[in-house]
Amino acid sequence: MTSRLSALSILKSQFGFDEFRAQQAEIIEDIAGGQDCFVLMPTGGGKSLCYQIPALMREGTAIVVSPLIALMQDQVSALKSNGVKAAYYNSTLDYDAADQVLMQLHTGQLDLLYVAPERLLNEGFRQQLSSIPISLFAIDEAHCISQWGHDFRPEYAQIGQLRQDFSKVPFIALTATADHATRQDILNRLQLKQPTVHVSSFDRPNIRYSVLEKKQPAKQLIAFLEARDAKHESGIVYCLSRKKVEEVAAILVEAGYSAKAYHAGLPGHVRQTVHQEFIRDELNIVVATVAFGMGIDKPNVRFVVHYDLPKNIEGYYQETGRAGRDGLNSEALLLYGTQDIMTAKFFIEKVTDEEQKRIENFKLSSMVEFAEALNCRRSVLLNYFGEPHHKSCGNCDVCLNPPTLFDGKVAAQKVLSCVFRLEQASDQSYGIRHVVDVIRGMDNERIRQSGHDQISTYGVGKEYSADEWNSIVRQLIHLGYLYQDIQQFSVLKLTPKAGEMLRGEVEVNLAKPRNKAMRGSSKRTRSTAHANKAQKEDLTDAQLETFEALRVLRRDIADSEDKPAYQVFGDVALVEMAMHLPKTDGDLLKISGVGEAKLAKYGFEFLDLLRSVEAS
Ligand code: ADP
Ligand code: ZN
Picture (cartoon, rainbow, N blue to C red):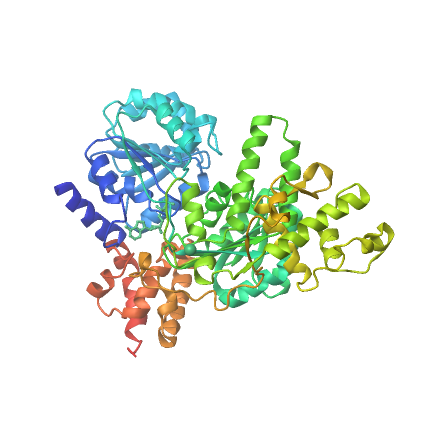
């Protein structure tokens, strides 16, 4: 109990937060009490505090193993802003700086030391560790130890040995990787001692998921940004290819957005600049391949757009999870087109290992099911991760704007019989576009030459537009009445199930297609899950003005200290300040994210500004 109390007082005084999030308190209590822990929490869930607070509660220095150098520097600098004694030890330090850190470690001046895994190989360093009091070992991104994971690092292999060398020190392993095989593998390899396993919900209630049928994607992207009023916001746009990344970045710049490209083909220093500028709010939008992401610990990313279909839900979830780590409302938009499925299938076909191919196909079809879902998207995602969720979330496009269903039997029969007649007439199958052209009775060269204007289904479907027929065909594929033969130019073929539909034995409801963003999509409806959090959308115009002034002050201070703005204060803190207009030190301490160190450092300047604002 006493440890819980002091954990809470550390949370308040050092980090400025009032309460623990789900699981944090239990995890901290376990590890502070010397118990090994395994923590599975989604990105943005708040893993860092789970070892940072016990590090301050226990005797000695906490050793944090982390694979990402950029993240290490970020975390250390954030901790220092909160008055915590932290340092890192990795290959970026020159000889003197490294020596300095080892000296601090040796003389007990550090609460936390972040260490790159390869440093643990160094015998001298290990010796040094065994000669000082260590409060705990934290293994961040613990999935890196597993070959099953998507991010295997051979340097992580020796961590299992550490557990044996330091048998009296508690270990905490943390990851956001959910799948079962990886989870089990991590536990085996780390050899944790009867760890308590803490699995948090993977739901991110503040992220709104929406999907649009891809059609003029550049326009759709810009319309989305305009609807959000995104000129002052941070966001990421993911594309599958480097070429597309360059194109989309150029389109955004042309449209007046602050945007830059990021992909593995760019020189290291360019990538680094983009990363830095983004973290520091000097660049609003990064258009990137999936190469951009690991190490993006920026809490105020307000939107993530997938311009192309991701290969699987794991990737999609991880990428969208980079939005809204601060808990404020954020959006994830997926542009979803048939061509993308074809491209993905094309690559899967090249995989030679049959088992691997089967897995990738399964993952792709789960992704497609998500994109075509007619029920709550959050339910689809969470169910995929084995976390049953049967309620409608109220914060995804399907819940907010349920698709209009129509009786699709006649339309389905038209499509299926058209596919059948075309095959009969020409002894071959055709792709979606040609089938739709024939149904709609188009007059073009290809139709005339092949005589397809003579078949009985020519022109039977003038009631719908080409887009609408495209959507109907896709839904029929999804429902298993048609399939696309990817080995033959993606031509459409009937499945055995098609017979029932053609004979009129089954009913089918289809959804009307959508390709425009919901109106007012950036506005939120309050869902109970995050109802008590102050949100920027709740600010009045006068309060918004204060918020902007606070942002400018934050930027100035951050620039002068050469650090990212959010390390001064996060957006949540600024929203609360604009709302409550604190006038005294005591008032300011009540704001989320204001602890004693930051009060001492920045309190004067912020109070000065806030005192000049009249309450309205
Ligand atoms: P993760 O490592 O799990 O991705 P972080 O540890 O970076 O997540 O935390 C994400 C964000 O949530 C950070 O901005 C952090 O300050 C904030 N946070 C964590 N715990 C709390 C809490 N108890 N109250 C308020 N904010 C919190
Ligand atoms: Zn929903």
